[in-house]
Length: 117
Image (cartoon, rainbow, N blue to C red; front, top):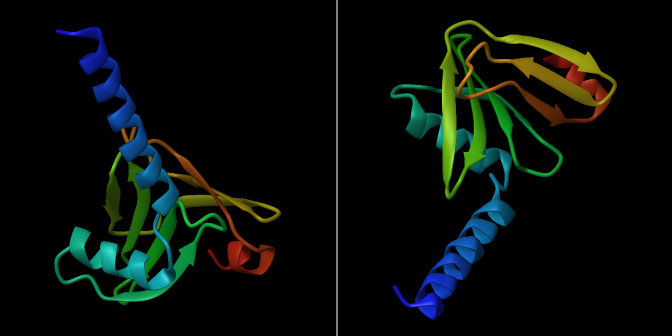
C-alpha cells in the first residue's frame, strides 16, 4: 500500500470520528429519539442530558432507564429495567452501569437535576 494512501485514509477516518464526536446527542428530543430506537416500545418520560450533550439518561414511563453515550460514529445505548446506581457529587452525576464493556459514566448536570436522578 502506498504511504500517501495510508496516511490519507487515516486522516479521513480521524476527521469523520471528530465530526461524530462534535455532534454528540444534541438535544433532549434527540436523546429521547435514540432511546426509542434502542428499545422497542420505550416511551420516554424524562431526559437528563449532559451539559456538553455527549451523554444522557432517559427515564421511561414504566420506570426503565436508557443510558446513551457516543461510541465512534454511533450512539451506544443500554437499557436497564430498574434505574442503575447513581451518586451525586455536586453537579456531577456518576452512574454505575455494572457492565464492563459499556463502563460507568459521569454526566455534568445542574445540581437540582443531578439530585432528581
